[in-house]
Structures are given as structure tokens and as C-alpha cells.
Image (cartoon, rainbow, N blue to C red; front, side, top):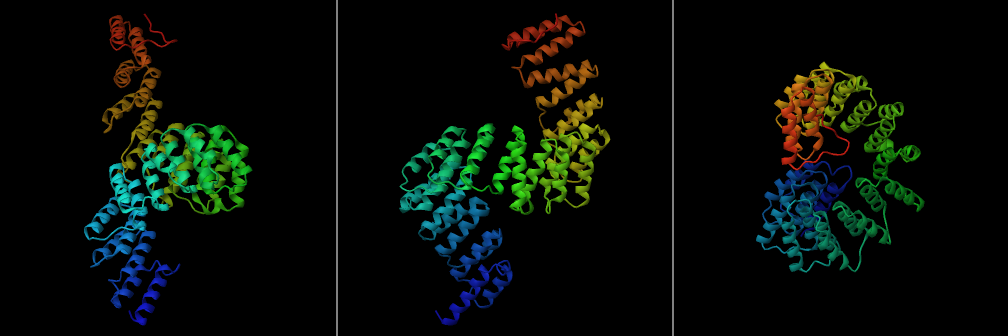
Length: 484
């Protein structure tokens, strides 16, 4: 290989890995095409690696398909790229192609390949790759071993993961974190906490993971206590810590801790630099009823995303400021931010609380017509509530009947409540019958229907309801009474 060729190759690699030049992929591609280096596996593997980091795997694949003799370096880069960005199935397909080409996998292949398998729903594919790892003799290589643990822990197969974990002579923080998350995800939070206590070395990620798992299992007090322990041991919260702990503070009413996190986020510039931190602060103050601070933070955020707008609109709805929430939605649209389905749940809830019937109907129609967002149960729930609260009980019933998805008990329950308020006994009977079909075990529904019949003096129907309860082995709950 000539000296000039090596110099040219080094120049291209410098361009690929230069902070300012690496994004100019087309120019770099054109450069090595001009010099007939488009079949260099060395250059192509680096090019593909950069494509992976820039989320441009379609471009990487175009080059790969034009390569006559791809080697292990190029296959490794392609598999790693797909393991980071998906489609994850492509990583498996490439591994099969590599094997059919007679190329032997190395340890750098299996780590990203196992990562891709962890992201697929089919654990059998991962087990097959695990078999390839064992046949190739790489099962005890550090990153490969971690990859296999992640494969089983992410799919909830904690017995296999624990067996592999126990067999490791050295366990780094990453594998401990994987095991903790795996047990917590399966619902065994106590086992996750036990492993966390056994760790000789922890990172902020370890603390965040355990605090989050406790919060998600409803153990908010323990989660907050663990956060205090984390601080006492000298760990500095990062943006993930702030985002995880603020909802715990709002749930427990720990306003002082939330305010401390706010101050910390400002002094560490997390609030200014990380959108999710600003969103979490807006949500915290909204749920604490401090709309003034919530709005101030929202308005001062240097960068907002759709979640920012959704959080503020929902916060206004939560605090009974529906009209202001609708105004904020309109401001959002005027600034070019595209709403999503959560945005419409928030703004329709605003309409419910403010009694804005016509506006709510207009927004419900525009959701589909202007933004191609199909209504979900939550959207229908808002509209049924809005119509029912405004006395449009029959319209609410017609809306439920027209739904393209199966109505749930909440929708029929909302309609029933309105029917009883407005004396629509005929529709109330329809709603309760639907509730009995959906919840045949709920004695309260039978009692409600029995009472409706009793109020109308339809005693034969009352007796039929009692017979139906006996037939379905439904017992009346304590404190419920059926007239007659």
C-alpha cells in the first residue's frame, strides 16, 4: 500500500471523526469516491459508524449494498448501527449474511448483536444468538457477558439472568444496574432493592434507577428517602434525578424538596439546558397548585417541545383555569408547534372544566380533520363528560354509540351520572345495562338498575335483576340497598 494512499485514508478518517466535518457525509463520500476508495473496508466501516451516530442508517446501507467484499469490520459497524437505531431485525439479517459469506464473528460483533436482540420481543432469537456466543467461545468476554445478561433481564427471564450474573467473576456497575432493573420490571422490587444494597460501587444511574423503580411501584416515601440518602453520600443529582424525583415530591406534597431541586436545577444550569427538567418543574408547581410559578417557568424556558405545552395546558386544566388553557393551546398552534393526542386530551379537559361546549366540539373535529389524530378512549371520555355536563345527554349517548372502538365502563358511568342528574331514566337504563355487560361482577351496577326500575314502579323488572344477580353469583356489597 503506497504512502500516498495511507495519507489519503488518514485524511478521510480525520474528516469523518472531526467534530465540525463529520456531518458533511455526502462531501466525504464524494471525496473517497473520486479517489476510488469506495471499496476500502477500513474507510467504509468508519463511515458507517458515523452514520450510526447520526441516525443515518439508510445511507449506510446504500454503501454497504455496493460493497463487493465486506469484511468483519464493516459487518460490525453495520450491526452496531442497527443496534443503536433499528430496525433491530436488520442486525440479525446481517449476522446471517455474514455467516453465509464464511466470515467468523469476533467479540465486537456479539455485544451490539445481543443489544439488538434485547430490543426485539422474540426472546428465542436472542437465545439462538446466545448459542452462537457459546459456540464461538466468547461467553466470558466482559461486554458479551453483559449483553447476554441484558438479553434475559430485559425479557423478564430473571432466573437465567441471575445464573449468568452469579457466574461472573467480576461484575461492573452496568451489570448490577441491569439486574436491578430486570427484577423491578418483573415486579420484584424487594429483590431489586436487595441487590442495590449489595453494590460496592454505585453511580448516579444506579440511584436514579432504584428511585424510579420504587416510585413506579407506588413506594413514594421510600423513593424520597433514597434520594435523601443519595445526597447524604455525596452524589450530585443529574437531569434524570430531577425529572424522577419532582413527581415524587408533588405526590407526597414535599414542596420544600421540590423547591430545592428547582434551585439546584437553576444553579447547575440543568433548567436552562435540558427541556425535560423545565417540563418537570412546570408539572411539579402545577400539581402543587402554584400556577404563577408554573407559568413563569414555562414562559422563561429557552426551548420548549410539545411536552412542555402539553404539561402547561394540562396544569391549567388541573387547576380549573380551562379558558386560559384553551388560549395557550391557540398560542401553541400560532407558533407552529404541532399538537399530538396528549395535547388534545389536555385542551379538551380544559373545555370540560370551563364549560366550553362549542369550543370542545370544534377541537374534537379538528383533531381528526386538521391533524389526522384518531380519537382514543380518553378523548371520547372528555367529550362525553363535556356534553353530559352541559345537559346534552342524548348527544353524549349518540357519540358513544358512534365510537369506532369499544366504549369502557368509565364512559358509560359518566353518561349514567348525567342521566340521573337530568332525569333521563330511559338512557340511564341503557347505560346501566352496558355497565352490567362490561362489569358483570360489579354489584353496584345491578343495584343502580334495580333502583331505576323501583323509582318507576316496575317491580317485575326489580325481581328480574335480583334473579340475574343470583344467576351470576353476584352478592350485594355492604352499604348498598335496592328499593323494594
